[in-house]
Length: 96
Image (tube, rainbow, N blue to C red; front, side, top):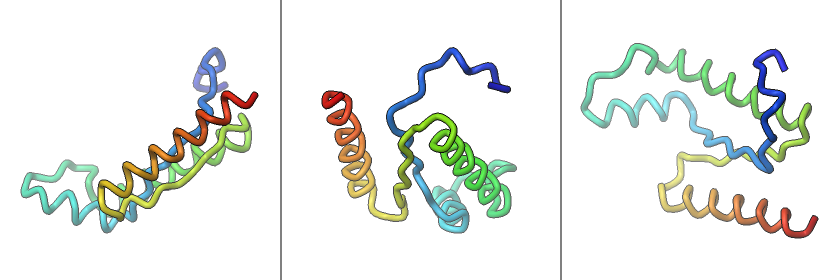
């Protein structure tokens, strides 16, 4: 409510794409491009924790289903898992 978002409808599911900060930094470095100022292990870890807190708060306060997906897997595996979760949440909508 402090953000003024009370008029928005809560999602059925939040999918948290979880990656350790060190892994994220290595992936960013592998691109061969200059890193942005926030792309450090310390800052990405703080950002990861903040997003997880948002998901946990939405689950606790709004009853939103929250799931974590390990994105250290191959892209195809991540995509399949996210699709499975979203389909599962959608099927739950039809059962109501």
